Image 1: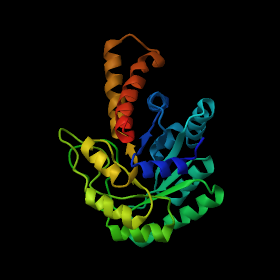
Image 2: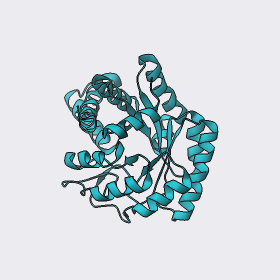
Image 3: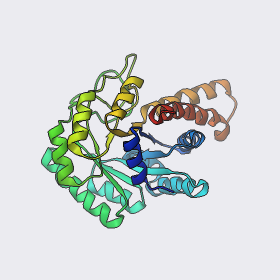
Image 4: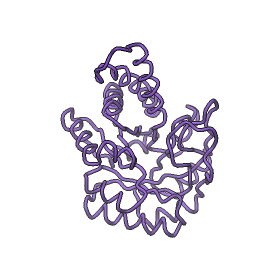
Length: 283
């Protein structure tokens, strides 16, 4: 089986993207895995600090790797948005395939300093681990929004070049018009496609698009062709979970077995993920 590093390299060469989907429970994991397996495309399972705390940092690794081993399938786990060296260290020690240090709200010098420390530690434990860093700010929560998050700031190509050069990250996540969360009733802002092209050229490493929920299909296609090799989706998963859970409870008011109540939840997540994977992989 190919490594995650090899799969990212191929995606970059083919100008397609790997889907990255966050989980908070087993329903999400099965919905995402079933969609990827049906389409026969690799997939990355993400878990933020809050999600890792709820499910268990080590438990997420075990769950994802058990699917990889049982089915011989390219499914990988990523520790999403580690906000401290200690958080990232915990994820590295637990065996995650990839980790992200999120110093986007720090001054550039401090962001570079901690990211470099994270890279050095992670590579000393596992030379094959994928390390991602980011600059710019896109908001901090995957939820339904009334307005664009305060303090949103785009990444400059010059900052991207400096950051990658001085930290040694394998992947870079820029702010290019994307935001965490989905705006209520209206579409999310358009992406700055030219900025993506410029950052990809300056950074010299594959790019990661965070805050993918709510972005138009046209922008996704253009962003991927311009250098985005991984796309993060979370809010759409959470929305599908809630809508299908509410529907299931309404249709089955006397049911108390969680696995029966959540059957339609898994299917709803699967449908959401499948739609995105088809677009990202050009299937």
